[in-house]
Length: 80
Image (cartoon, rainbow, N blue to C red; front, side):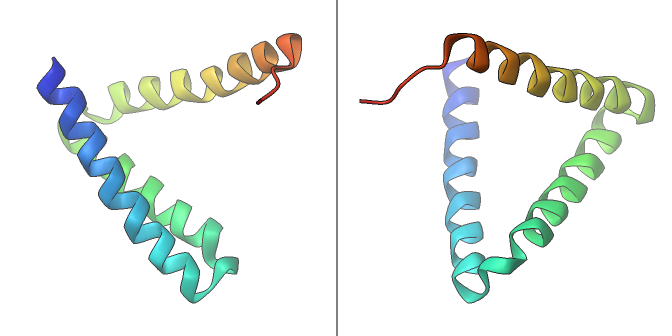
């Protein structure tokens, strides 16, 4: 499992660098870059999990956004 987490971390780092470089060219393209990343992500999930499982996975992710935001709002953490 540690190898998989490490691989995810490495790829995330590479993507962060790519996105940062793209946004240096034009910061207003942020939503366009995000849309491209989401489209690629969707295609990878569909090719691996199929349409129905991908839809369930995206639904779960969307629900987690709401739950996370509610949790953050209830605790209102501060960064020191």
